[in-house]
Image (cartoon, rainbow, N blue to C red; front, side, top):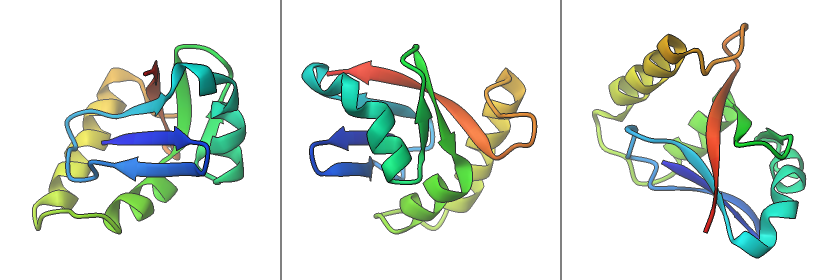
Length: 102
């Protein structure tokens, strides 16, 4: 799963893939990542290697895409894995995701 930052805003790509999570933007659009995440209500980026994404909103957006019947269990496993790695916020509402320049 990934969050794509485009000139039109943000969208969740490959929502059925719960084995990875990152934020992607064209190299020339990296300056727009934080503004796009905030405007879309999906999270924030401080310019570092990772962005903070709102889990509830990410889940809602992912569920509107093409997902299989096993998706809810795989989503829960992904969140559990992130928790085990320390990638969830203390209150469990956000997850850290790598930011990738394409």
